[in-house]
Amino acid sequence: MATPDEALPTVVIVGRPNVGKSTLFNAILGTRRSIVGNEPGITRDRIYGEAEYHGKKFGLIDTGGIIPNDAALIPSEILKQARVALDMAAHIIYVIDGRTEITAADRDLAQLLRPLGKPVTLAVNKIDAKVRENLVPEFFSLGLGDPKPISAEHKLGIDELLHDITQPFPKEDPEPEVAEDEGSERRIKVAIIGRPNVGKSTMLNALVGAERSIVSPVAGTTIDAVDESIREGNTTYRFVDTAGIRRRGRTTEMTEKMSVVMARRNIRMANVVLILIDATEGVVNSDATIAGYAHEEGRAVIIVVNKWDAAGEKSKRAFTETIRDELKFLDYAPILFASAKNAEGIRRIFSTIRRCYDSASKRVTTGELNRFVETLKFESDIKIYYITQASVRPPTFVVFTDKADKVHFSIERALVNRLREHFGFDGTPVVLKTKRR
Image 1 (cartoon, helix red, strand yellow):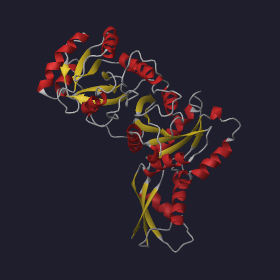
Image 2: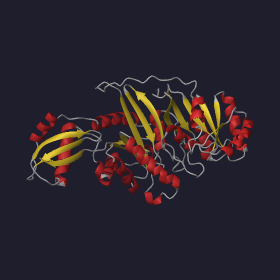
Image 3: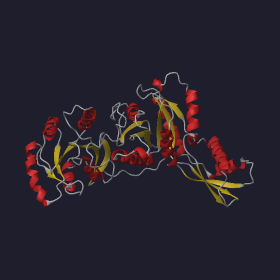
Image 4: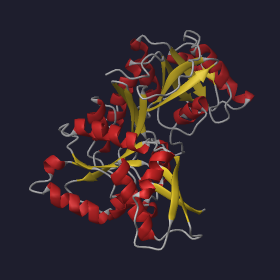
């Protein structure tokens, strides 16, 4: 299935660990899309973004630090992921640390890039003073043409770098804005969240039908968030696989602290959130914490019980009851059973995402709501005059009553349940705000 990004030329950033690739990626995009820090090897998967230079749009991929001949599991997986990115590259930026001598690993990587037949620009990073520019000529020996001195941290030399790289890229005409209607294209951003090692990356691969994320038995392999888009009919899905979230008190390493920040940010940017629960372990406390992030942000939520193929003799009905008991605040969220590893239950996830997105985007007219108010009867002295819908995603309603105070929790809950029954807000929180008329 084609992705909406295929038409864009792609620029891939490669280099040894800790040479400043992610800092350059962020400098080009103007955002904090990659995790950046002075701990080597922080970026493990390739991260995608869209950039623009003088009207020329291009995709940008930040790869993990490549050590070509390292036998350890993660570096070899990084190299495998980087090769996938290099195959689609229109241009490669090879980032090297200008303050250190050329290493054997630098030469090995240059040797790996030359046979690809792709345009390569050698960016000599951390050249932030005139005196350091004298260090640049020695990098000619790598045989990758004229080295470009840059400082990603101080955004020096970036303009010249992009000017050269984007020369052959087409200049896009701005597309006219088209008003949305019933038949217009839907763009649904879906965040996949959950504890480390519940199968988020495997689920992303199953959903997009490609080996997109690093998948390994090591818990917490995905540190940054990675994403992939696919299109079906008039719907484009962008799936974001977030890093495994651990409780704040336990995220002692800088990388894990940052991963929580990035994961919460991706929840905020999503329309629908898939919360993965491990069928072999059941519901644990951290599942409730993670689910709480999505609920607090007002996102449409789907609970996916993954690894159901390995659950043994467990009953779906009993497991569902346990989830409802442990995650009472997500009583509106559909529960699906799947096996990402065996690609079982995947089609149902797609149809449920569409249903929940439509629910969260639903608008009810004031006329319909007034007729709905006439059917309400509560064992309370409160009088509801009328209701209006203030916004969508999540559906938010303003309830006008004869009381100055907020309505009692039981009345609010009953009213939300009646709104769901009447208008079908499946999979999305419903927010009520009360006002005295």
